[in-house]
Image 1 (tube, rainbow, N blue to C red):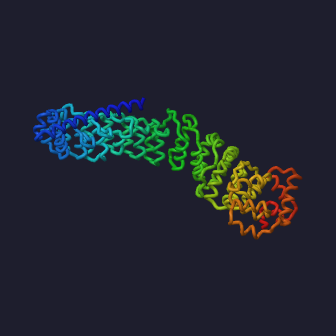
Image 2: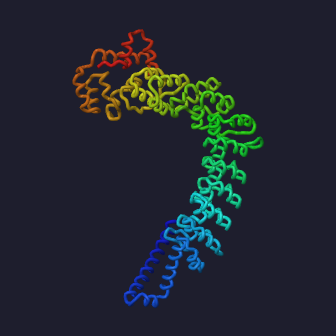
Image 3: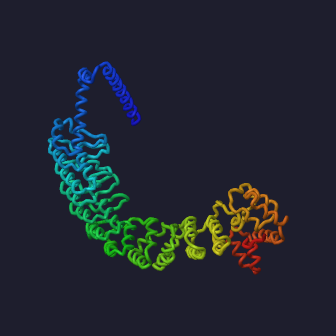
Length: 534
């Protein structure tokens, strides 16, 4: 339907332009035949009338622009001229407002039936032009007169550029609009009322005026926020106390977001204590999401204990559905906060929360933010609460720190295999079923392939490394022995016999049994690929 409409409009436009060009061509032909311009106007009386009207419009625009009230009165002798606009689409009233020409403005308003709702190219009326100018004394005068004259206050109500939108920072204009009868609960495009906007701009006086004239404090705006929520997010203590009286009382049923409640606790607000008095019988709480868990753990330990003392059952309800895979910062001291949760009797919930953690994201953040000892301490702590590791985690830790203490600890844990490998050497370490022949067809899928030369020396490995790394490994290959050393042969034979003899399936079983063998530590390091041979 829309395409059909556009085609029809295009066809009409073509016919109009064709007619106009033919008319202009006839006019030019007549002009060429005429001796002077007066003869042309006599032969085309309509052209004479149009020319005089255009000249009058130009003079009228100049008079309004220069505040020449006498000239305006002389020229504005017909209602046809009420709708004159300049090249920017501004009408006479808008030009007078923009130029601060009060005399012309007053005269135009005094005219009977002068249209107040004419719009410019931006679909804005004279009232919108007045209130969008910053609302100094002159702009307020123009807006006040237009409102008293009966200008439409609901123009563009559901768009961004409303009268309320431009007036929200000016208490005088807000009071004028409210006293005139404008709807204080009107919406604009972003689904917010004037009270929402006043709270976002932290204008205390405007908030007080709107509440006095009946603004609804329970109206939900963008993201389901009520004005009280916005005041909390803006950290405005005055508005918080004022809106709390209008929003919550002993007879109301209300629903507050956990994020807002935790913001109050973090701001050490006295209103947090008042929620405790109402929570048991008259209030309900929205479900806490992952973001609110982060907000909870960003509280200091003292405030966290206070929150858990009052809302332990609520935290117990939502915690198993969350996880700890968010950005860990040094100053947050997350382990101390988790310990607070455990000491408050939420150990089972913490375990479920740890099990839900996306370890790929967790290690991505930890390895980027902390040093090796801290990452090791945090990982060991979470492993004690059943943190579930994946193959990707071992790859990341090995890439960051090599065959470190944390990597050895992770080898003794259950690891979920994903077959998404980038490092060649750790694959040989933790995957007992990993066969070199299965990966040699795709050498470019791996990084640090040349590290295999520290553990293996045979023609097949050498050719694989040359294919994957090129000439940069040629020098090392030339210096290596032509046949495997006795240590390598013994290691490979022992691993194969040991795995087959005890029917070992996982790295956890293998490394646990190796640690229990009564052999020298050097031999253990060779068997587990911790010690390099070449």
